[in-house]
Amino acid sequence: MGSILIYTVIFFAGYYGAYVINLMTVRPLITNRYIAGLIPVFLFAIAHGYKIVNSPMPQGQNTSIEYALSFNVVMPVVIIVMGAIYAMWNKKDDKDRMDDKDNSNDIDNDPADKDSSNDIDKSDNKDS
Image (cartoon, rainbow, N blue to C red):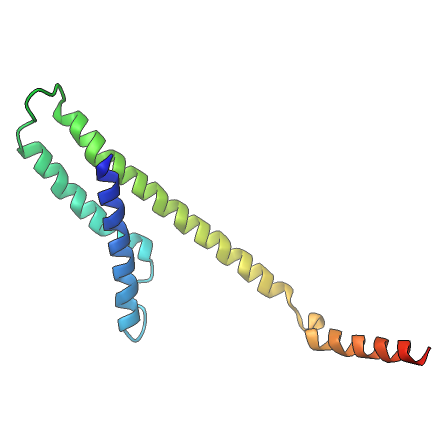
């Protein structure tokens, strides 16, 4: 399970690397940092799979190349991709909620109007 940790670190390095690149430029070059974080994960997975296939299997273990590839490469990549898809979906859902909240604040709901109506109510209570 150590490979999932390596792939997670690589994902976040790519994600925050895209963030730093966007900070250094005048306008954002990379619009989807989740996809930018997945690119180094896929490149590392290809190199990792190549290394597993071309190196001899450890002595005394009854494992096949398919098992090693599926457990050390495919499973971590699938978990990272599912996490990135969930984060993208969750961010889109949060953005939609914020847009709905912004649209519900019309001119009729101006907080300045509420304050002035409270001042009138308070002055009426003082006279009584």
